[in-house]
Amino acid sequence: MHECSITSSIVEIVKRIVKEKNLERVERVDIEINPLSSLEAESIKFYYEFLTKDDSILKKSRLKFYNIYLKIKCEHCGKSYKVESFPTKCPACGEFNVCKDASDDIRIKSIFADTGK
Image 1 (cartoon, rainbow, N blue to C red):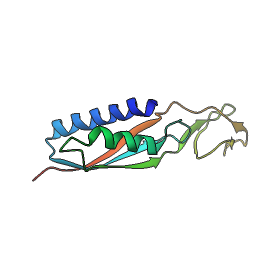
Image 2 (image 1 turned 30 degrees about the horizontal axis):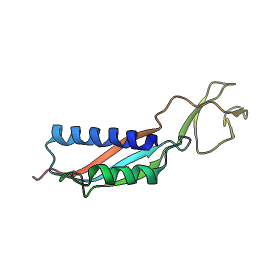
Image 3 (image 1 turned 90 degrees about the vertical axis):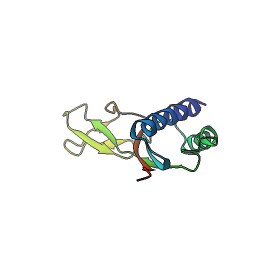
């Protein structure tokens, strides 16, 4: 259920950018989701459509989702590297790691919009 509040925050951020940039219509919002987060893209899409259905600037916009690579810092040698799944071995020393560097669970990658110009 936290997808609703996260999606509400996304909508508010997009609305703020629309106002700041004086945009006429948003076509697409690209979203990156951490694959280890508990966020469901379909739930976010559902809430986004619900929250924007009466907004003339956002109602026809769509979300496009991207999985991001996780950045791991090896507990043994300190090298940072990107991974897609767990368990993972460090490419430098070959040891298994489970800790991830701090990264966002979700973020807006880009907004495609019409400026009307």
